[in-house]
Image (cartoon, rainbow, N blue to C red; front, top):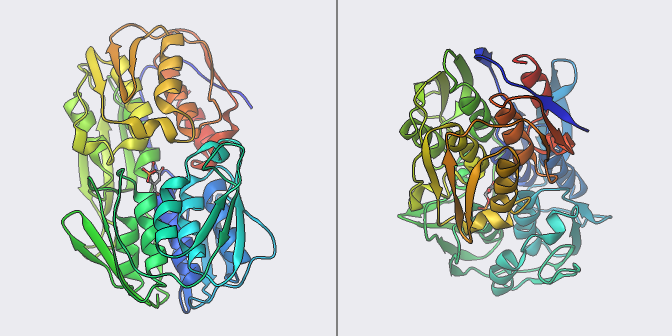
Length: 434
Ligand code: S3P
């Protein structure tokens, strides 16, 4: 499927983007493992999260749709959990395009007393799984990576009794941290994970929400097993990573756009401060109750005529890692240099996002320097609309459709169906501004 965009003058309105992807995956897993019935509101009904929900069904959880919104998207689910006793799946588990789904489920399956298999699409089958295999094997699981590329999916997991470990993460990854903590829930004793930098803490927050022990001491997080999560309803805030596309789109002069109920978790919101440093004007009004597990609020973006580059700080990279392609587009639209370094992890996302972002920016006429761990975007050259590939990567597709809103001529993004992995409804939201 091809999607098109073209230059517009300004953006006005109010938008509610779909639920947070990271939180929805974790809600499916913890709700599915818990004892009792969890109602999850505003679940992200995207292909990635539905695959995780289906995986939990294969493991014995019961999932009912309670509400569909706008006629077609289920957004409220009732999950009846398996009380920490998943059953062996009858078929291999399909994780689709999702690294989060595969890595988090692997943590749980490593600790289950049966064999299981997981597979994914071509992109997922080329992403590194050694990073979870190593700590999970230290905990006692046996995992085989059977992909054509070494260390890659499909995975065969020979689960069983796991023991607690103290693990120092070699890279700042919330997925690896979460895989270890999920296995740690089943182990007898305290499992700790030391992070080189703070990463998104949704697992820690949901552990507390479900009554699972969770300690945080600086950059070290821990849990103590065996743990028994207890069902607890939750509402998923709108995904700040999806809202980021509109923050950049609404940075054009004359715009005023309010994004509602957006997750403001401080391990996820550096895109806001980065854009503010780049000259974007935003008002943030927290609307969540004080004690909400995940804070959220309304963000109003006002257009600015003085967008300019910035240098992303090393410590903010894990906090805005998924927003770098759209920030690079903002960098191209502003004056001066937009500098990203210390972001080698971008090379192992759904695509090599340093290469795919740079390739598409260059096709639009932007001067980009590429480094092993980042890029420098030399901003300020008018963008040229052209035909671009998504490379099968949802965030690349959406970033360049937004770039097209500021380009001369038409922008076409091919293979745009991948957008459904994280933002069903993006096409409709885009259409209202064209
Ligand atoms: C995620 C963590 C990040 C992020 C991904 C979602 C999560 O990946 O890029 O989109 O939900 O834990 P890494 O843990 O590999 O950095």
